[in-house]
Structures are given as structure tokens and as C-alpha cells.
Length: 416
Length: 144
Image 1: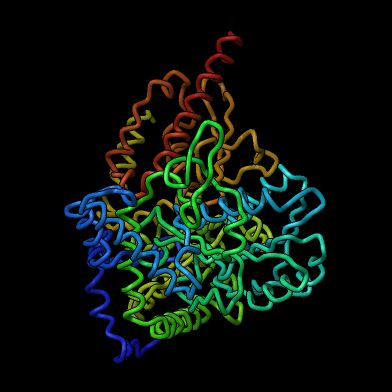
Image 2: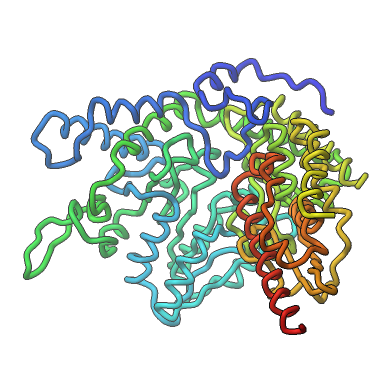
């Protein structure tokens, strides 16, 4: 086993871990090691407290209320929008649309921008490493419109084959919808190059930021992406909330997504006029409490600093990768040069489900299966992987626990 | 041996493992490894048990007045689980399988060992074995 598992002194992990009540528990008689962060991250106390406070003190429906509570909840709700705007460097707050999450954001773009701009003969480019939520909405759109879905190839190391992208990129392409960082492999895709090339032929680009928002510096203005979607729960915030960033001219031109309250300017039986952005896309009472609590998650990240978070996570990933590579019978899936802190692997002769259950017996939470990327798993000719994904509160000692468990399993398997 | 005497035997074996979760799961995997291999030609879509997250293939036929089961799975733990069921129900009379109360599952605390998803899978395996027993019973009655 690797020695010197010291915590960096400049980054006080104990203080960080103290903010996450859930981490301090035993599972199956062992200290919990939570390595399922790519599925969802845990929430710091301040997020949980903000959610409680909202319901205990501030609860009221937002916008248009003439009373104190409505005014407070509206202000707090809009504070989160302002924080997101700053967090991803959006040119303005009204370009941030609240959604239920990444999947909802992609479906919104498919149903509005897609329906308005993509016709028979057009095509959409995705990649072979997409999450099902960045495949199925486009398949549905293609079925409805007669457009074609084209798929960028992925190499054996789990990187995009950029030659394949160049070949697919022609005048028929109206949209490139691509994952910023792969949830199954961790690969960070060269989105700057993709955006630049797509724009040269007039295609728009949507970035699936589910795995990038918490791990990478995201500057939508500098990236020049047309849409960016992500989920709060992947970045220490509550479930059921996410956001869509879009370029102003696109959002303004797009038809509304759902009809209802909030999204209208004036309703008459002769016809309805729609509200301005962002409200045009926010029909109905939103998930107010969770949006408000999400602000605390963003402040948590801001206070720690993305650079410090990235540096810590990169160190964990390098340490875990080196450790896994030294265990006979372990195969890493996804060995791209640039990765977020996701480590997918297999133990020779053992099904990922069985590995997951055995690790759970040691208190270690990992994800097993196809990670909603069945086409990618088929490409690697595997049913699934075991995925350990690290967050800001994880430690090298926890990785040692994982490596010990995996080493024991690999050895046991060889003895069966 | 009767269904219940086999169940009691299993309960005793698991008692030796104590409360060590890892050893218990590993023991289940070892049981799976000992399950006789199933012919590849039997691993068809039709023979897959619906309701299991893992792939579990199960076939059954009459053997004199009894039911003979054969199974396989793509995961070792699931293979271990079905092997336990086969150990209890294989070569038993259809009516005994149909009326069997498989109390050993609760007694060995299987639910907490394998979790809710796999427990649902285990229930699907038992249901399918009882369905096969019913079909074998009908087949035997027609032969009479």
C-alpha cells in the first residue's frame, strides 16, 4: 500500500469535513467512505440550514407578492441567480434559467431551440461518451423533425476522436451537444476547439456541465458556448434544481418551453404574450427553497476557491490512479490525459455489482453499472464499471481504504 | 432431504460466519462458483428471469416425480443466491416446492446483506421457480 498519505496543510480538510454532517457515520460497522460524488455530492451544513430557514422563516411564493415574506423569498431566490451568473461569468443574470437539473435543461433546449431551428436534412452532433440525457432528447427531436443524429467517435483511452468530429462537421450541422467532462470516464473534452470549429460553420454548441461545474473553472463568456446546463446537486447543492445558461439572442428568439403562470406577460382568450427572459422559461412555482439553498453551495465553493478544490481533487485522482495501477487484476477504464476526479475500473473476472457490494461491506460507497452511458459501455465491450469519484471533502486515507478493499478483492478473485 | 432440513442446514452454515458482512458475501460468491455450469445454448432471452438487475438464467424440467433446476448468472453474488435456492428446491416434488416457506432467507438476514434491489431479484427468482414447479406439476399430471 502507498505510504505518506498526508493531508496538504494549506487545505484544511478537517474543517471542510466538519461542514458535512453526513460524512460522520458508520456504514456496516466501518467509517463511511463516500466516493459516489459524480452521482451526487453531499451537502454542507449551510445548505441544509438555508433550506430549513427558508421553510421556518421565509416561505412565500415569489414575484408579485405584496407582503414581507414574498419580498424576502423573491430577493433570496434572485440572489441565487446573481450568484450563478457570477459563478459561470454569464454576461447578465437574465440569461440564467432555473431548471430541475441538467436533464431538464437539455430537454428545454431540445423542445424550444431544437423545435424552432432544426428541420429535416439538418443534423445534430453528440459524442459516443454522452450520458443518456444528452442522447435521448436529441433522438426524440430527430424522430420528430427528420433530422440526423451524428456521433463523434471515442478512442480506446476514452478521449474524443477529433478527426471524427472534423469529418462530421458540415453545413447540415445546426447543433453540437457535448459533455464537458464525462461522468463515466472523467475525460475533460476539448470544448474550446469544438465550440470554435462549430461556430465557423454556424452551428450552436450546448455544453453538458453536470460534471464540470464543480470540478473546473467554467467561464461561459470566454468559452463562447451557446448553452450550458448543470445540476445543483452535483456541486454540493440540493437535488431538483439546476440551471440553463444561454446566449441572450438565442433565449429571446426561442419559443417558451411550458405554458403556465409566471411565463406570461398578458393572457387573453384571443391570445397570450410571453414574459421576458428568464421568466419566459420558468412556468409555474419553482423549487424556491432549494434554489435559495443552492446559493449557499455556490458560496461554499467560492470561499474555498475553485483552484484549491481542483488542486486537491487532482491530487486525489493521481494518488488513486497510481494505487489502482499497482494492483494486479485491476483495469482502468478511461485513461485520458485530462480528467476530472472520476476513476472507473474493473476487477478481472468480477462483475461491477459484486465489487460494489463487497466494497459497501467495508463502508465504501461507489457506483456500479453503465452510469447511464450504455453506448460507451458497448464501445468498450463491457457491461459497466465500478466508479469511484472524488470531491473536495475526500482524503487520501479514504483512498487507501478503497485500494485495500480492491486489492483484497482482486486477490480473493484469483483464489476462487 | 426435505426442504426444511436443507434450510436448517443453511441457517447453521451462515451462523458460523457470524455477523461479518464481507465474509458472508464472499461465502455466497463461493457457493455461486460451485454451481454446475449451464449450457450456453440455455442462456437465452426466454430463460432470463424478469425483475433481476443482473442476468439470471433459469431452466427446469421434471425428473421422475421431481423438479430439476439449472441456473446461471453473470454476477457471482447472484449466482450464489440462485445456487442457495437450487440447493433447497432442486429434486423436490412440485407440490412441496409450491407450498415451501423459504424461512432461511429471513433467518440468515439475507435482506440486510444483499440490500433491497437484490432482494427484489431474489423474490423474482423464487417466483419463477414456483412457476416452473406449477408447470412441472401439470406436466406430471398429464403423464399419469
